[in-house]
Image (cartoon, rainbow, N blue to C red):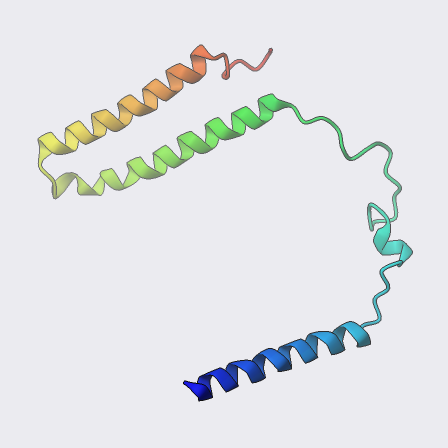
Length: 117
């Protein structure tokens, strides 16, 4: 137990020494003009990088992720068809599709699927 503690302390001290030496030896300057510029390609920005993001794009992305995850959850149900009782398998699939259709209805009802506001 003591040996394990000593070894871990040695590794801790060595890693701290190496990080300190690399910080001292490194040639990077925090005030480097090229690195502090907004783009390293040589072009000055023409407008602010903080433009307002459309919430509609975010909502479309969330909808896509929800349906994508649900499709990924549906796909393993196909190979299990041969190994599970048909009635149970059908009930599970209908319930899953019901949740999917109710989610789609809710999004449609909230006008999240309309592209124009």
